[in-house]
Length: 282
Image (cartoon, helix red, strand yellow):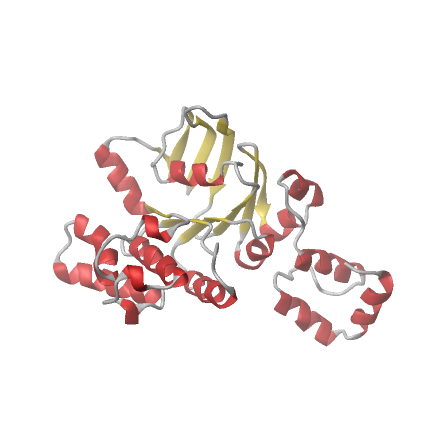
C-alpha cells in the first residue's frame, strides 16, 4: 500500500537519518519498526505522512508518488494519519471532544458527520466518558488514546504510531493494544523498542540500523533471527527463544507469540517443563 524507495534524509548539522532506506507497508497488516535510537524510525514515519520530504528517493501510496503541494499533502494526510510519541504535542483544545473534532471540522463536513466521527473515534479508543474532560486533566495513557482518537476521526487508511506504548504501565498497554487490535480496517505501522510487544501484536517487522532496513518480513521469523536482531541492537524476545526450545523437543510451537501461548503448550505437555529444565535455561 505504501512503498518507500531508497530514501535519503539528513537533518541540518547532523549525519544521515535515512541512508537509502526502502520499506513496504502492506494493506491491512500491522507492521512494527524496531531499532536503536537514531536508527531513523521516527524520521521514516514523518516521511510516510508527508511531514518530511526526502532529499533523494520517493514515497508512493497505492503506486502514486507523493506530491508536496498544500492540496496534495492535505489529501495524503487524510489517508495516512500520524500520532506522535508525546500526546501533549497534539492536544490543544479545551475538551477531548473538541480536540478529536478538529480534523473533521477542517474537512468542512456537516455537523452531524463530524459528531458521528467523533463519537466513533472516542468509542474505538474506549474513552467516550472523557468527551467533556479537559485534556490536561487526563492521565498519560488517556492522553495517548485521545491523540489516537483524533487521528481516527479522520478515518485514515493507514495509522502511523510513534512508540504508542512508551510510558504506559501494564494495564494501559493492554487497553491500548486491545483498542488498536479492534481496528480491523486500518493498516497500522508503529515504532517500538519492545521486541516482545512486536512479536505479540505485529504481523510483520522491519529492523532498522543506521538509517536502513536490515530485515523485513514475518514477525516471528525476523524476531527469531539472532544475527539480524544483534545488528539492530536488540535481543531475540524470550517467547521466541522458548518457542525454539519447545520446537526442538518436537512440540507444536512454531506459532507461539505470547506468554499465554507458551503456557497453553506447556499445560498440554507438562513433561516439557522438566525437559527444558534439564537442558538448561533459555
